[in-house]
Length: 296
Ligand code: DGL
Image (cartoon, rainbow, N blue to C red; front, side, top):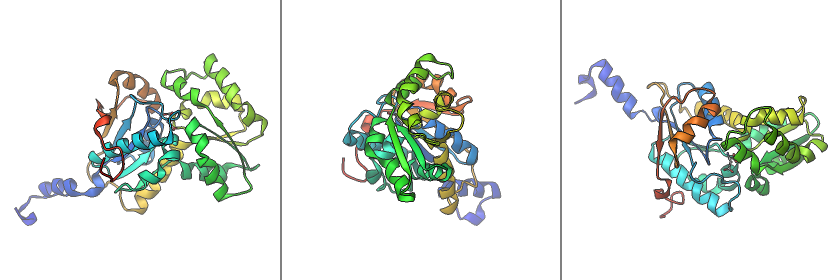
């Protein structure tokens, strides 16, 4: 049937169906942490659909080798591509630090947390002393340090791996007065406090969930930079710049995990600070290709 034989509403439905801009944004993380970015994305881009993948069956990534992180991240991104996303966001400091080269080969725009977060920290610091906390893999990669130095080589960066924070968050040890989390935070943050930083990058997307504890330990004067939030703002910039805005169909959300959906649902609501507003499905991530654009 030619378009001029279609009624107005049918034409609208067809246009929506073929409009690339109506495709969802793909967001992934090793587990629940990336939901801190999803929460912000929903605020700054309320018309966009989102497909989320949390690799809850293989979390944590931060204690693994670079080659394993690249393999997992490629499978995560390939799953999102199969869902027809228009853009892929690695809402994970660990993946962003270890798999940039591989994920930059994706056939859709790829955004990670490093550059937007480093830019926000450089804007915020007054005394040119920035702390970075993240997983072991993130700190070992020096990704934030390099991005900050490239923006301002006079800035002193002090980093600290805080791997236990990830387990504490995934297991719900998140209350502001949680004694275990406070104790761990005091231990981890001691060197950073002694260095006198005025800005602290939460370089792992799990960490904003325990921001109140981190704030208590760091003191009120230190500016905390939330990598998920900064990345969501940057995604908006790219969507506008590349003319990728969804102007048609109403947004929808879907959440996918590689382990039990019930556990995910319970903790996800804390991350999203609201009810889960979409289907939660368990998928077999092992069946997706282990590299980007290659044969396997
Ligand atoms: N949310 C992930 C990150 O931003 C990390 C947790 C992990 O898998 O170790 O680094």
